[in-house]
Length: 300
Ligand SMILES: Cc1cc2nc3c(=O)[nH]c(=O)nc-3n(C[C@H](O)[C@H](O)[C@H](O)COP(=O)(O)OP(=O)(O)OC[C@H]3O[C@@H](n4cnc5c(N)ncnc54)[C@H](O)[C@@H]3O)c2cc1C
Ligand code: FES
Image 1 (cartoon, helix red, strand yellow):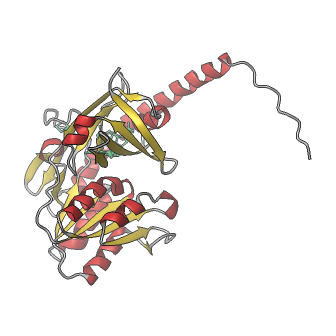
Image 2 (tube, helix red, strand yellow):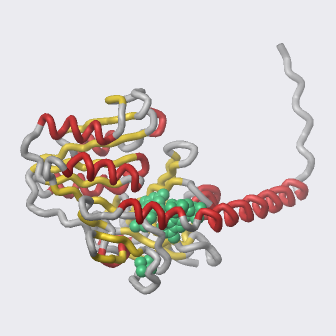
């Protein structure tokens, strides 16, 4: 049995869940911006997940996961407190460069709110003035507002439907921050590619350095397979070893989005096969159970 015990699980919504995993060495080595590659079971797919938090004293790392396909849904179903991950490799990727910036805007969209957190905290610890901008589709999907309030000097919450904070996308939050502060040194944005593209466009005219964290499909995570190839200006880079952080004004987001879409048919078919198999397993388990007792009569 491996040592990667799940010690905490929290469900933020029907599709987003947090796992805190015991791994003292990883917790000791982890730096903001890095990721791990996880296998939930022996025959599972290897998937990259950002280290959304780490606690060196407790010896744990935290992953926040969105159930989007076969593996992330399988993990949502199986990963409970007291169970173990089969494999956990990392920390991988180049740590985010927490430089000497004095005023920084840290932007997280949807699930990107989790990986931007360790960066916001690191900037705060380095003495920077930190403006957090977090965006969700609606209030019910929000998480970690308390953690951001604790490490940000200002926090701008954005929701698509206006159910919390300002109504609109995170780019509206960036515009608000830029209008109020003429001296922003850097913007760091993490979220879906289309969101990071919007953030990079929002800062381009102001000439504000903008870092994004790219999420192409990764296989080995060691620079060997070429799966995570991304175009940065006139160069080709591998996000797993050269990133995942890059200059947002140089990233070819259209190429990234086209590459991410290329595997959709295979992902759909893996999901359908898994659904059929897990229904069959559940059906067999239900058939093996003794018949449920008749419901007690309802008294008025
Ligand atoms: C550096 C990095 C950090 C990431 N951090 C997180 C995180 O903290 N939390 C989180 O929920 N997700 C994260 N992701 C995305 C996560 O790896 C995918 O959602 C996951 O692999 C999907 O697998 P699936 O079988 O559930 O879904 P699938 O149906 O296989 O795929 C759904 C979508 O996920 C993406 N994807 C699929 N396979 C991979 C892969 N091997 N590598 C990367 N992307 C893939 C594709 O866009 C695909 O369309 C990260 C990706 C990268 C590259
Ligand atoms: S994941 Fe294989 S080269 Fe990056």
